[in-house]
Amino acid sequence: MATIDLVDALSDRFSGEVIVPGQPGYDERRRVFNAMADRRPAVIARCADAPDVAAAVGFARDRGLVVAVRCGGHSVAGLGTCDGGVLIDLGGLKSIAVDPEARTATAGGGVLWGEFDAATQAHGLHVPGGRVTTTGLGGFTTGGGYGWTSCAYGLACDNLASVEVVLADGSIVRASEDEHAELFWGVRGGGGNFGVVTEFEFRLHPLGPTVLAGMTMFPVERATEVLRGWRDWADAAPDELSTAFVVLNAPPEPFVPAELRGGPVVAVPALHVGPPGAGAGVMRPLRDLGPAVDLIAPMPYTAFQAMLDPSAPPGFRSYWRGEYLRELGDAAIDTFLTHAVDLAVSGAPLSQAVIFRIGQGVAAVPDGATAFSHRDAAYLFHPISVWSDPGEDERLITANRAFAAAMRPFGTGAAYLNFTPEADRVRDAFGEEKYARLVAIKDAYDPGNLFRLNQNIRPSVPAATAVV
Image (cartoon, rainbow, N blue to C red):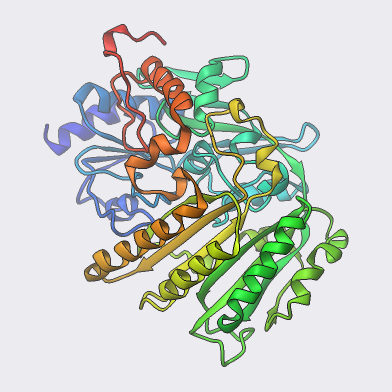
């Protein structure tokens, strides 16, 4: 079908904006966070509301076109865009409504975490959210969603009260514990496999607007000592401590001693999830390690949430992994540091290697309560390769995979799909029993696999036999 025909066919039932190749805004709207995903959809449907999403879904389904769904565009696998299909852009669904008395908030499927945090923090409330403010609510939450405060309050998906979903047949439903309960179970960890979430309703928790948080930094020569000390501190700390260990290249900023700038260093970000005056004792063991840089201080929660933004700029080529660790023994520490320092000096200065302390807020939710799995891990290992030269793709991806393989003996064997580009890790993320349940939900709600540009759960039954 000619481009003009595509535009006319969709525009007749669409209140948002339809963009095709050659029109203003097309190149901007088709780009996603990872520059390796340089794709050209036939149509970009920038939706204004849920009926627009339903119209775009029906348009693609009826013409046999592939569907991509974009909120923040942060999928490391580049799943928020496509070649030759329909890109459903949720960027127009920006509504946010906070009920401070009920401690709930509803947000449209196009809201970014920085926008959501600003709205909820106006009332001293929050929900565990993305650690980069330009991350979209959608993929982050439906994939589970580890945030800085997950140590105390669980995953983003654990704090959902309901969702509005556009299904493959174009119908719009509300899913909760009481309506479409199996769909609600699957959406909490099963990603975008079952429909397009156009509205989220979250339960909120008090925090901020000021928290005790920040970052410390150490010379890389002290890495083994500091990581072992950090592990001992994290293992013994209360769940109000959120922290990570990072090997990265120090930025050329005035707060960094001149001798450390531009070279590999150890950084430890930390947040006390509670009143700022109650966190000094929790932070003391970190400060007793004697950091070269100590930026731990009372600060706005929104500022801490934005702290990693400079290290995650869009438009670069990226390859990440997300692997779980049962514990962090000395052998795991030695293996991690060997590869982490190599990653930092790889010639890709924005690359970094992270270990997040998970905390018991995640494990406190019963494993069977949601599709999200493997809640018993102590740590999340996250190597991040970021570069600009396409000629470096093979070298840097191979090195990152080797890093993940070297850490696998210390892991659980499971993957965190929000950080994982490989499709062959999907079963690993859920286990066989949960995967079978997810397939049954897929059979019911998307038997034709219209929503397949995701960490895909493939249906097993013909479309004609499925019943929603």
